[in-house]
Amino acid sequence: MNKRDLHADLAACDAATTGPWLYDNGDIVSVSLEYESVEIYNPYNGAKDARFVAEARTGWPHAIERAIAAEAEVERLRNTLIAIRTRCAGDAPYTTTGAISTIAYRALYPKGATD
Image 1 (cartoon, helix red, strand yellow):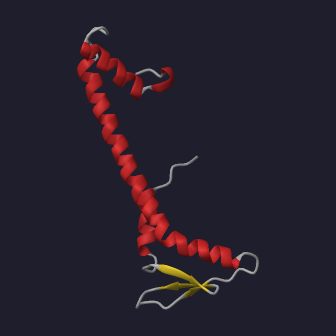
Image 2 (image 1 turned 60 degrees about the horizontal axis):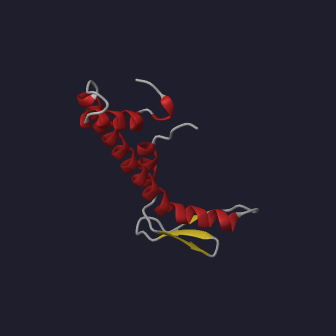
Image 3 (image 1 turned 180 degrees about the vertical axis):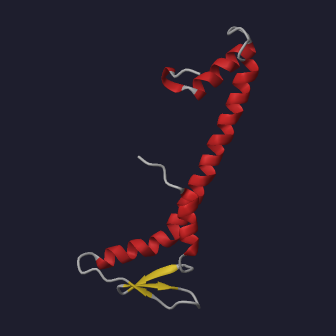
């Protein structure tokens, strides 16, 4: 699976017509003074597609923002584990710092991966 550029996705959401959007009798309606409506036509699945687009206008940016924050937190925690591992790596495994080093190592390199 390819990793999406979440910052680019969020920029695309922010560039779209401001919301919220509403689904109204087959149309997507933006509650905005700039634009009155965006109509979607699909003879096979128009109503379901229109509802999806309307819901995505709010949900997609929210999900992207959460993913960006989660990725930043993972990176911060990874850097903390690297710092712990670096500081404690030479200590004997039966000491407190040696045990901490082992815990950090296992968190950084799951499933037997190596440095």
